[in-house]
Picture 1: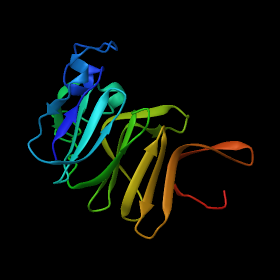
Picture 2: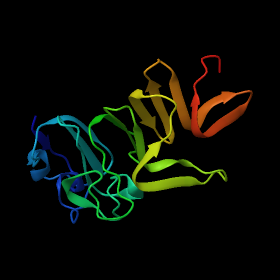
Picture 3: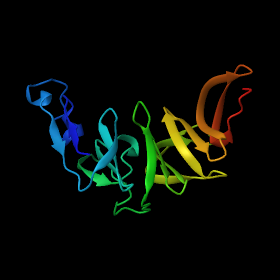
Picture 4: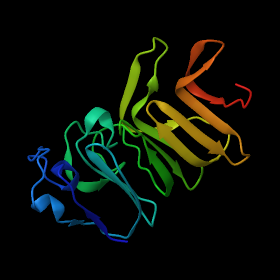
Length: 193
């Protein structure tokens, strides 16, 4: 399908120089976003947009805060670009993306390919010293099986395996024995927690 956007935050529709919250009459008019192919899914963050094409290409544009666009860039992008087509190294070309999830605060993105591989970028988790880690290009997540679905929240990531096993990693806001859990690598989510 075709993509149309509107709103008062112009960075999401191609004008990085207009960072105003003031709503004008122009903001109420929708504008077509140019794509070379049909789009099957859209997710919009605070200052960025993501679109999945029917052929499995994942596009992003907007303000690149904390590497969330996955383009290896530090600045914003005014036109949709395919994630993985960066000239910066290391370049990871995402092909045949099946689905993706953008965190509500839009600082993390998780994608799963048709082959069941999972990639994350933006805020990707945290290190052994509990510092938050960032990555401005897709980083492969090592999981023990092929994944069918993904979901991410603010620094919490979930992946559903073909076997029905649910994997989770990141900050766990649910407590076990009075302590918050922090998992830097995926673990099997225990239903008895």
